Image (cartoon, rainbow, N blue to C red; front, side, top):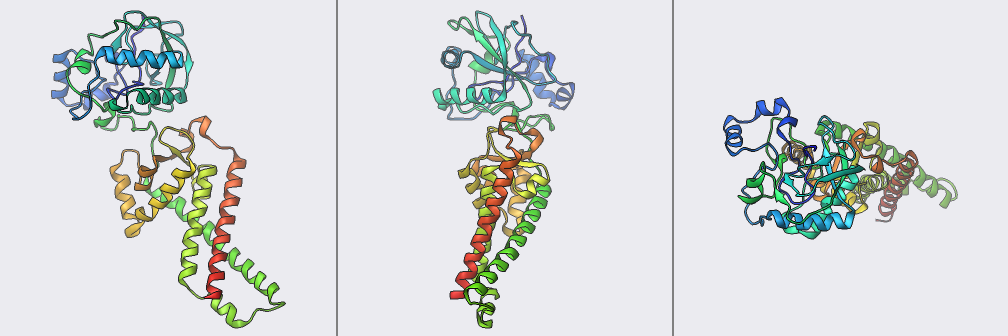
Length: 373
């Protein structure tokens, strides 16, 4: 029998159930002595950490397995996750503990799985029992396995986790506590910090500036063609003087550029050069609606020379600015992005061309409004 050490795929009672022999020594060293004493006194391994959040119902063991059986029936088994540096189960081996619960019949590891399968399972549990809260999204670089249960009836909680499932309410995972940097980020991804993202914005501003120059050249060329030669001086003066319409058109151009590039590829020119990509919290590609929401949020984050965004990211474990939080997105390194969410190079080229074209079109529209105002 192989002892279980898997991520929780259902209610929020814990994202990672860590057995004693899988816990890093550094983690123990950083825990408060009183906390360790409580674990020792109660006979616990680290894992399904109890919380005191009010208002969330406490599922019983039978309730948990009832929902787990529905999910397993719908999906042909459950998915468990193991950190890469943890002991891995063999295919065909049996787990005597899954998510801190011990079923009467063995839980057999039947196949390899992946993070996308895990995320679907989280949503399946949440769909059946939203009042339990949504589990965290796991880690994209963990190892995942499918487990089949041959009997759910009468499943009981293991001796090492009874109090966690029966003594107090719970909704959050081990991740919510600080373990001196050893806790996994909430979505399983490490967000890019403030200053690299500022540099990416600067690069994108240069792209916009070049697009604006090109827009001015094209507009002047069209004016010359329409005038049959050189346009009148007063027209050129009105077109190229500073005007509120031109300012608004420029902002809209930058907005369209970012939304289009992010929606199609996940990266603008600046982000791709710095090997960044915007994805949803669940690891899926950034959706158009999310791209719009996060870019609208940028106008709030950029207030006071970016201090709003800076402090928001400083307080967030995933380095999210306000716009990311509202859109459920995260900016991470492309090396962390799941392979299913990485876009091909041609999609980037398409997004960049469409984004720059929209930017130029909006700038030219602003120049046209200026000319006629």
